Image (cartoon, rainbow, N blue to C red; front, side, top):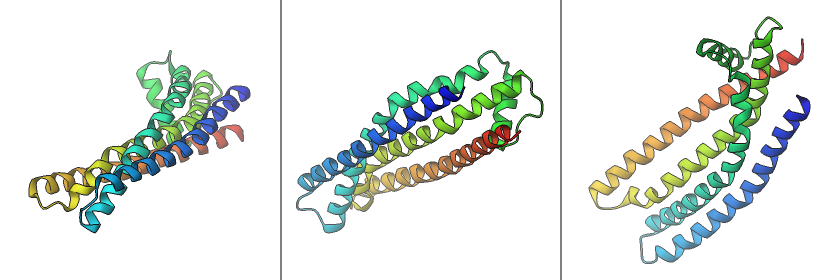
Length: 191
């Protein structure tokens, strides 16, 4: 299992090393496009257009860059609990996310440990992909936040506020789950 975990960590490390320059490059290209397309606008609108195009291209390209890693890491979250019934799967998830190892050394405890190891590697990739995707979706709406047209500005404000609220909520939830999975792995190894 250690070699398997090492392989998962290598996949995640390579994904982040590839994604950071792709997202930064996408942001720069998007910002240049924003500069070219927003000429003649008011200063704030032009700034938001540049930022919006940068976030759109950088976020979407970064999210796309993490997609292969997501597919490679998905089995680490599926295989350990594949043959379990729904109640056992929920039990494994609750134990892992709470950071409290299952007390016995039976098959369920081993599966929970394997699932926790997969979660420690997979969930940060999923969170990063989610946040990059939301940045890419929200970016094009930024210039509309200050438009004179009441409908477009109102829609953009509600839409961006909803994306930010959901993004914050998911970040908090994912962060707790990641910390719980890390505590689970550390506690199970300490036995």
